[in-house]
Image 1: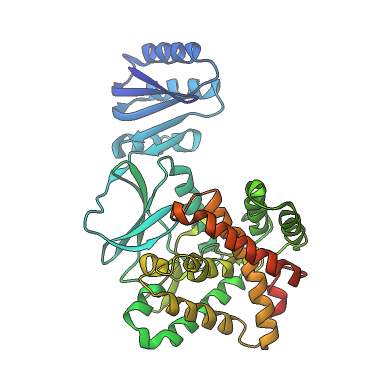
Image 2 (image 1 turned 135 degrees about the horizontal axis):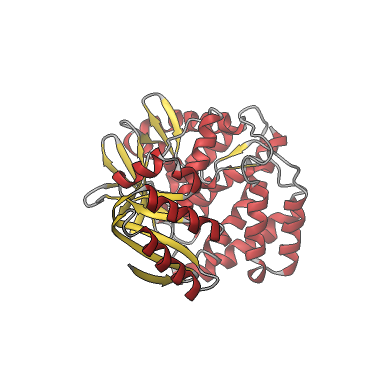
Length: 394
């Protein structure tokens, strides 16, 4: 049996068959590994394990009693079935071996801060995550998508997790689905209709209410952004933003978190949300700010940004943003819409600064000027608002 230390984890690689003839020896070896590495979590890699008997399972149970949890990863379908039939998938953290998937020649249909979405074939898309240790993120997205689906929110649920080279991907079945972004590219003459449908769908999502504690609060997420930006913000701007966020009352309505047009797809006649890892609850300002970041802020100092990111020119993106705002507040007068825009822009500036300063997204040579322009916007806007809520304006 080979072992490998990875941070605070000791990985033991199981091989061949584990049965009554070698189970006791295996237990002794694994106990020796634990004794030689105090404080380390023991993880079992079953990539080369062909079979495990009841005697082998008893070994795992004894190990499980000696540490808080026990993970068995890279389990083949045949061995996983043994774990499942015997009920051990409920007692241990058992993870199947991931199948390999190639994205060579696949069309890119979406690109975000943490991953890229590819169309594998007419019926299937895969979101490939850029971070090497993204499995917890994928599991979080799957969990939130299921929560949304059970609440009646139309969403695509991942049915498989795969390896794509040295990265991980989440696979979805979307029958002949197209993003609203692609629909505008293909049918520019229908822009008004497409933006209207897209906006009404957003409003339907925002009307859905969750139970307290089911999803994180978007306000808490942004307070985290603000704290991580503290060193980059003048103290008066930081303090004013903190006061405004803290003054926002609890709101349990659904927020997607990145509801730009590439994250809403039309499958047949049904709109569907994808990229559910940012799902939360809160005021609609936490959603509409994302469209402003994508369509306006990224273009301010890089006019061709949306053309590279969305394949849509800057002037069309500005039209989309303005039309969406008018449609979202279709029963409100111009003064209310202008007030909503100020509040959205402030929240968008916080998100944009987080992307620039913390996640280092964008061209390095533009970072400083973007930061300065965004701080200028905040200096202009903050004295003009008393609240960041927009849900109460409608």
